[in-house]
View (cartoon, rainbow, N blue to C red):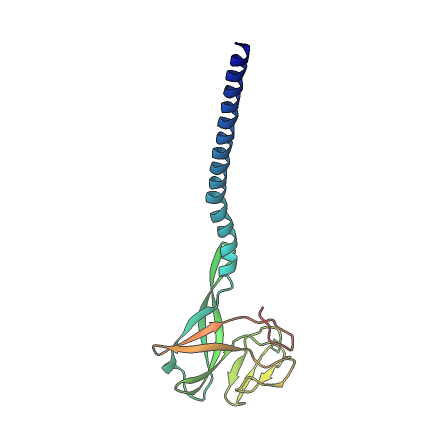
Amino acid sequence: MQSDTAGKQEKTAQKQVERRTFLGYVIAAVGAFITTAVGVPLVGSLILPGLRGHQPNWVSAGPASDFPIGQPKAATVTVTTKDGWIEQQEAKGIWVVKHTKSDFTVFNGRCVHLGCAYSWQPSLNEFVCPCHGGRYSITGQVLGGPPPRPLDTLSWKLNQGNLIVQYEDFRLGIPQKEEA
Ligand code: FES
């Protein structure tokens, strides 16, 4: 009689242990689900804006026919930059040299010395920077002054008659062209 009672108690205890184990699994599974559902979007939302900030900035410089062959012409492009959650649009200056209907050289509009805006001087046949007297040829080579490297060229392509430029800024004041 006593052993019967002991057996029943043992079975009941075993069932309780199994129930607790089952509940433990359920709680762990629900916890893992909640962690994944909340954590993955949160981590993604923190990381993705930063990654998106490094996407190439292809922007239109306008109809390719607007640029005269052989005569450098300034243009402004609107560039979207992202810093974390902050997105802003900036107007950036470029210089376009059109060689033929379908061949261009596009320069970043900042002097590579310290970043001043330079301009084309037709009478001198040179780009001239007003800040410290930097001078460049139509191909961007340094002719005089302190600029430590040629003008920074930008990638470009034609799309449905428009000149599309990959705008980038580069580090200033150093001999090699490096992403800023
Ligand atoms: Fe152009 Fe110094 S910024 S020469």
